[in-house]
Amino acid sequence: QVQLVESGGGVVQPGGSLSLSCAASGFTFSTYGMHWVRQAPGKGLEWLTFIQYDGINKWYVDSVKGRFDVSRDNSRNTLHLQMDSLRAEDTAVYYCAKDRAKGNNGLDVWGPGTTVTVSS
Amino acid sequence: DIQMTQSPSSLSASLGDRVTITCRASQSISNYLNWYQQKPGKVPKLLIYAASSLQSGVPSRFSGSGSGTDFTLTISSLQPEDFATYYCQQVYSTPYTFGPGTKLEIK
Image (cartoon, rainbow over all chains, first blue to last red; front, side):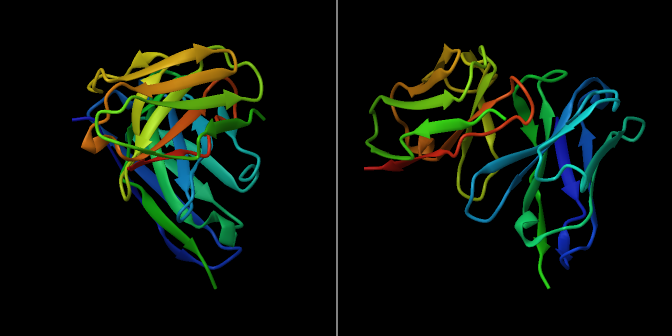
């Protein structure tokens, strides 16, 4: 079945770095755009970034631009999120999600999420 | 950036009620509007995409309408499993912003 599973979350000090991964299975990963979305404790959903199916184009929300980098390895069906210069406000559950198509569409499959805590 | 607002922020309703949630965009987004349901401790679930298209597997009591700046999600007859938080999201232009959510509670 179609599945996404995130990994790499944990506790990191402010200013530190963390790398998240999202393993995809059950669909042709290389033909779909992919997103990262986060949810701070008790808060709503925040869209972070989208990467096109071929990895060529990427878009970010301003709050993470220049600190986070999304990438994908279509040969390994894996999505990545490199997070640098982490701040306390980055504490959240991070979800990867599949676009229904190549973009401008619904996020139809979500992973269970991985928790990132930024604290000294 | 396009700002999304939702009303009401919370809503109490009874089983069998017809419920409507409104989402408004700060500028026209055509029909690039999605609706999600999230239950406590669970992953968001896509209900409606392109403003009015029902995602596969979603019960037909859910429907969406609207275009431009004003959109609605309607649940025709509330079931016990529908009590959750509902989010709209615009995918017209990045950043693909979500609304703040509407929490639907049992009356």
